[in-house]
Amino acid sequence: MNTLDTRPLTADAFRPFGEVVETDNASEIRLINKGTTTRYHDIAPVDVTAEGGTALISIFRGKPFAFPVTITMMERHPLGSQAFVPLSGRPYLVVVAADEGGRPGEPVAFLARPDQGVSYHRNVWHHPLISLEDVSDFLVVDRGGGGENLQEADFAAPFEIGR
Image (tube, rainbow, N blue to C red):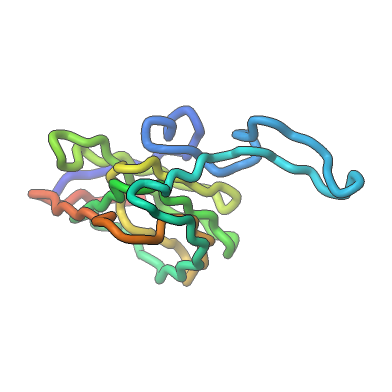
């Protein structure tokens, strides 16, 4: 079995795969609503319009994984981006991989803080939601509509994340 180490989730490290959804990524910060609210503008693009797609907002409720976490497969969405914003105040794992000839390459594992979301670019290989500690809810922004928007690939040998 292959071993994966986790690294902290940072905007720079995650940029090849998407955007970290946090206030530090805002293109502009301004007060709105007569000064009672701060708007952190344009943190991550929503890319879902290929083949007539529309934006959806959903809540995913993830059952917790226990360490060691075994990674046997990845998925990607060729027609749209997909964003996950944690709602339950718990850390979670983000596992992504570069594309290598239409299949996922060696995965990279990030440990996301409870105040960080992620937005995967269109066509980025990623593992499905990996909640930690307890059942956790995530606000998800992704694509609805027709077309083939899910591809899955199994690894020849699994990867294990020890912690």
